Length: 328
Image (tube, rainbow, N blue to C red):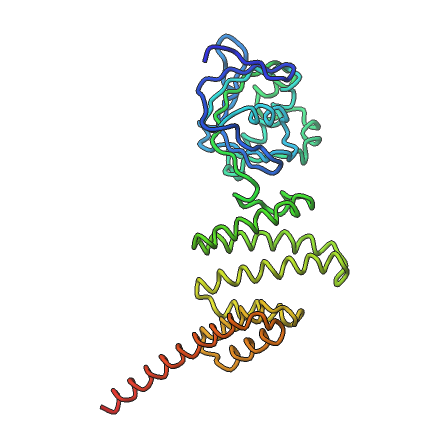
């Protein structure tokens, strides 16, 4: 497109070079935005300062995570996926760019080049240096100037769609992420994608465990978090049952019941795991406990008992055949 679009921000002009697809993405706090960029001077040669494609790795930032160059968040949130746009940014937006560029170049030279997420940590220390270690950046730092950014938006992922490190979430974000992860885990479970579902449940559990460390054990808020954690662990155990990891199910459910002996679902899930590893007495004892605590589950318990009896009968028949063959 030839037309220049002025964003509703002072000192920025946008020109769309290639239209994107779909609606404007949902740039919620915590969303991860992946993109390629090229930074150029506003001289006649349009001198290239940095180019992520030459480095061979796209960039990503987390929305609302205090990225060094705040203007990039403004630019990106005006774009659609697959869009390529050129942005002219006045000096009021580009003064910090030399410091950002220094960090990116150092990482591209071997300091974890795949993780191009740069935060404000240590920003003040950068100003202590007389030189940034790159002649062109030193020049740009001494005489700030408008810059041109050509950006290609590759992907926008909600917080639940990628693995965020614990340091990357504040307490409020952790609480917000848990129901999203829980729901996504349930959705994946229904689709039969048990490995992916278990990862979502695990991620939610980690968030809650971290929050729980900030509370006094066995007080009201700690117990609320504990209840949420146990629900997620039992969902995770349902995935493990599907993946035939029965002994891990026994370990998790037994741990829950040691601390909370009244959780019906824990007995029910443990009974199913016991049945799968031929622990007949233990399976029946857990199912009896389910009935004692929750009589309304009689039908489900009777179904599990029938399945257990059928499997045991099949096993006994196999053993009879084996003995007969050995004697024959």
